[in-house]
Length: 128
Image 1 (cartoon, one colour):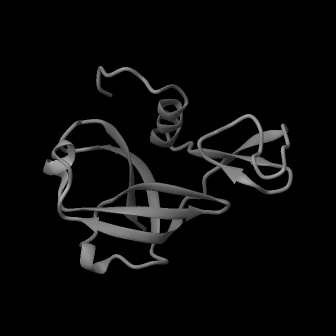
Image 2: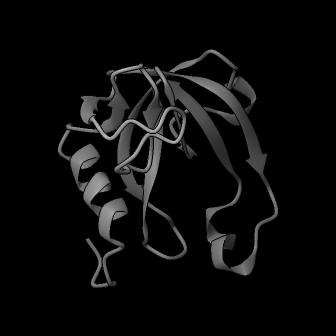
């Protein structure tokens, strides 16, 4: 991990994903949320529990980024995907697959990687 300042709950969540213990919070009505929170925005429930992320999710949508801001220029080209994990969706970088072979519905796992340009930790998906 870099020497950069931690971003509280987000870095705690990344630590859990890196340890194979990724989770989301869920109320008794089945509403799931990331980032973790104290109150369900859908129903107002304060009784939330940490629920393990499934081993795999499905790509809901994606885009290939060919031209990025200077901050991420060394990362291009890259694929950003939104992945369904039950009642939550997670956004991250899709690696380990040719961009032309990415499909909606593709099963992927989740891990923590680094951005090429900034060395910041990032959510990374890989095909299953």
